[in-house]
Figure (cartoon, rainbow, N blue to C red):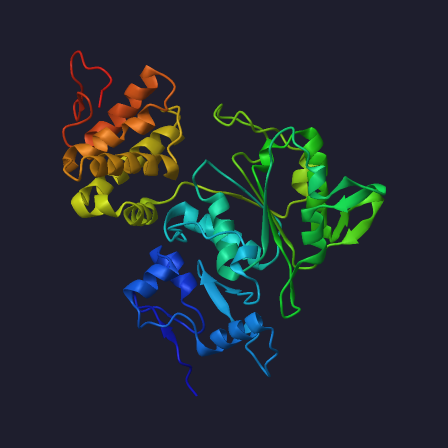
Length: 406
């Protein structure tokens, strides 16, 4: 007997149980937006709807579909969906997230997804804005994996993640921390199923020496043990995932732009199973994302995205080659296009499309440390914008040119 598949009204993609994750990943829109635009297109199978109804009313039906029957494909890899875990227990889905399909980042993400599937501990490092944390957020949301996000802030108390002293009328007592409970107990679903957590540690390379000693406890959990208050030792729930992100590989900053990073103990790093470097997104992926983020620009000046793509490639090549001392991440791209969009909206939609990109560049150029760096960046950007920027054109700066005013 053939299965009845759900079909995406946008691209025709099919799923057996749930289309919502595909819509978010492939098209960058919410379920509510999809329903409003395609009111007659179902998102969930009858089996999944019945299971969710049963969980809401706490009714034990005969044979509701089990979580093992629900799958989602991310980056070409199939994962089980924990249907009994609510979205509130997971990390939120990043807006407009797209699993990269092109360039080095696509392979980086594929490697991480394989390691997530195989329950490896993971350390991902790379420049700001390459989607390190976003990948783990999206994976948690799409697979309905319960997750905790902990950011490392130098000088703060990490011990409290595991345990702390509490006070009441009877005196002092030990209180178990959120991380300890999650790693040991997992997430308890309404139907009694226990699902292991993912712990995401953001900015691990900012840990100082004392913090790193507590973080050693976290990496030890890959061995299935964790220390609690008063020297107690607990088993860690099998299937628990420990992942970390950072801007450096743990040896300290070598660029001069990530000065808050610290060298990490080699013995600590050696306990982590897999290390991956994230590269900047290929414009074939990034261009689609920014078009979705800035629909007004896509409508009035579609050519602006091709220009932005050429600018992005030129700047990143210069940065990687040591010719330009700066960062040009996905956030930088969004800052420029966002300012261009703001200018258009604030002009009552009467702005001149051909000047928007040149004007939008100011919010990034003003972040550069000195006049010389700004001029270097301008020379790289100007050939890709009709008319150049502030007197800097395709043949170089004009006599007497100066930094532009907007």
